[in-house]
Image (cartoon, rainbow, N blue to C red; front, side, top):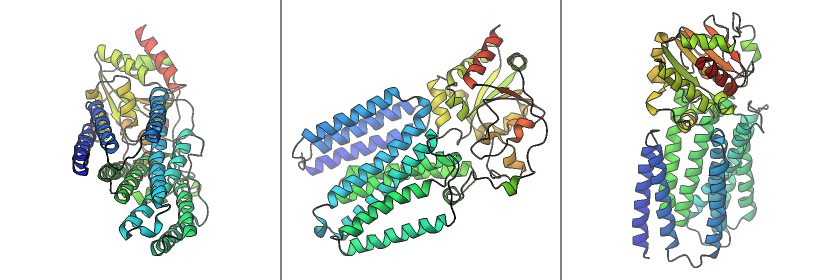
Length: 458
């Protein structure tokens, strides 16, 4: 197949990718978006296999079989609640793949590179390497293997800056002399180290931002590899992923009213005890029983459900939907308020509720529903913490001060389902839990909700 036809097919593939991304912007069309994107990838793979540069198919078929087996197993076995961890790993795989392809291209033909090709290969290795190790650390934090608290040490930013400067210096040395193997492999090691050191000081509350940023990095690495290989499909796909990931990162930062620099370097979640000491919540936390919670719900006319990571951890999305459906049938106006950084990746709550068949028209973003809390009888908070903490609006000494949060405290009654009194990712007490109109129901969210549903049906 001629290169002109292959490039035309790549253009069709890119169009399918763009249509897929557009449809992914809404839960109602997300499935179609996935199908369009998969079709685009299938078309791109077929065109690549038809390229005259392909001299054999044995290793390619083996690689496709291995990748399909891993991807198929993950799709079947990984729970929806573990999607953030899987996305982080896939970001790392994308970065590693780009770096390995660039490494393979670099070996054996170093002295014959054009300047632009050499530059893109170096960028692919650096960005791909730090994306790989950074994504592994993000996975560890999401999985609980690595502490979700920021890991900091004196002079940390100076060390990171020194590593970055040394990486640039070594890259210049390789650019001047592509046969400098020592400098080249030193760049690889430094890139891997930079990925680790850049992510460990970032707290668990910022993982949605970091996952989307690493996704953007993996796209940039793919695009750089595409330039090095003169492959238009990789250039287009990498650019799409890089740009969309960067836009999503910006949206996540805006949702927390923080800059990307603050996310990367602010060590959010590392509590300064001298700042918050003595400024804890006032009032008394009141625990209630299942029957009392059910009675409040029975006497309400409107309900807003606020899901958080606790709902995901307890896999309580299905019983949450059952309670919502039951109360809707009883005449309550039931809606769901979704904070954009609730959970551990962008859209985490939307994905879980969609999996539980919650109607899309019941899902409302924070900016679309925040004004309605003051006219709502009951708000049911399921495993959410920092995104409903009034301290973000009232306490300048709080590490989350200025972050837009859901105004749940303005409703007549707030019912909070919580497993324990552990603090959220920000590491501070939630003022909401001590307010006069808050009812605390302790226990596993799934079991508690099931018990409440049983009491409502009696």
